[in-house]
Length: 161
Image (cartoon, rainbow, N blue to C red; front, side):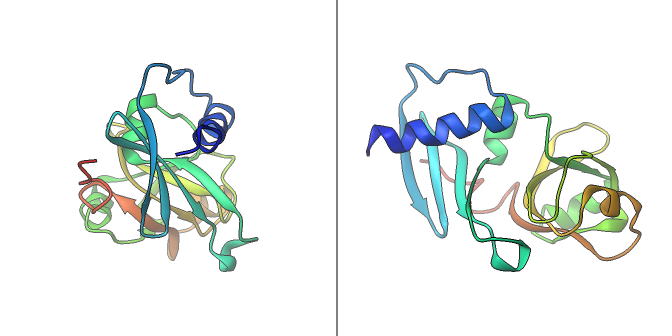
C-alpha cells in the first residue's frame, strides 16, 4: 500500500466533510470491494472511492464515508432524512423515493453521493446517488430521489476486515 494513496483519501475526507480526527496511530489500509476502493481504519471500512455513473454527470472518482465512517465522524452534510415508513425498504436495499424524503441538506446537487438518515433519530440508513437537486427532492411527492448503493445490513456493512 502506497502511503500517498491513503494520504490523498484522508485529505479529501478532511476537506469535504470537515473531519477533525487526524487518524494518527490508526492502522490504515485500502482494499478493493467490487467497484469500490475502501479506506480501512483498524479493520473497519470508513470510506469508499467510486466512479460517478455517467448518467449522473461526468465520470469522476468520488470519495465518501461509508455508513461506519458517517457514524464514526458524525457527518453533518450531504444528507436527506426520511420518514419511518421508508426505513424498512431502504434497509432492504431499495432506492429512496421522494415521497419518503422529509428534510434535505440544501446543498445537494443531482449526481452527488448523499447519505440517508432517519428523520426521528438522525441515524444513517443508506448511501446513494442523488437523482434530484435538493429543492426538487424536498418538493417532489413521487419518483426516485436517491439510487441506493450501500445500506445497513448489506455486504459492505457486514465486512469484518
